[in-house]
Structure formats: structure tokens, C-alpha cells
Image 1: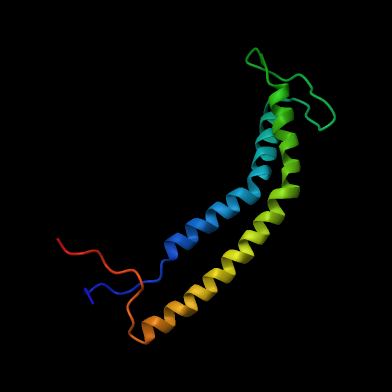
Image 2: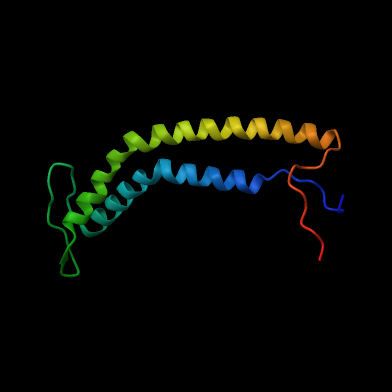
Amino acid sequence: MNGRPNRFPWFWYLLALFFIMAFAFAPIGSVMLCAAIANGYGCKVDEGSVHPCIINGHDYGELLYSLGVMGWFMLVTIPRGLIAFVSWLIFLILHRVAWRKRISAGIPPPIPPPAAA
């Protein structure tokens, strides 16, 4: 080979896992942000209606209401995130098994190394 050990591409799998988790739990982040802002400024927030929340002379009640109601997106994002995670895990296991078989047999990875300049 070229002196560099063949390594499994963990970086790309972890990056994909990060995006899956970020997608699945993004609504929880919006609800937590809404709650932190509302508690910090003594505002009332619920799903029933918009309540005024004056912060530095501006009314942010509608924004806080929107952030709070975005929590309902969890009904979609968490199941889809779970499906994406299971798919990711299956693909990872299959790729890892195939990778170990190729490396133990001495077969180089299917992507050739870049040409030396």
C-alpha cells in the first residue's frame, strides 16, 4: 500500500449521526429556548393564545408562542429520527463487516488512493 493504514471512515458516520440527532431533537431545542426566555423575563407562554411579552420595549409574545408551538413538530421529527437512526445503524454494521472482511483478506478499499504528485 502507500504506508497509510486503511481506516474505517468513522468521521462520516458520526457526522451523519449528528445530523440525524439534530433533526430529531430540534423541536425540543425550540421549546427549551422559549421556556428560558419566558422564564427569564417573567412572561406567560402557552399553546392556547399569544400573550404579550415586552422585552426591551418590544413585544416578543408572538415569537415565543411560535417557538413553543414548534414543539409539536416532535410528533414528526422523533419517529423519523428513529427510523433514520435504525437505518444508519444497519448500514454502519453492514459496512463495518464488509470493511473488516476486505482488510483481513488484504484487499484494498474500493476507492483508490489519490495519485502522488
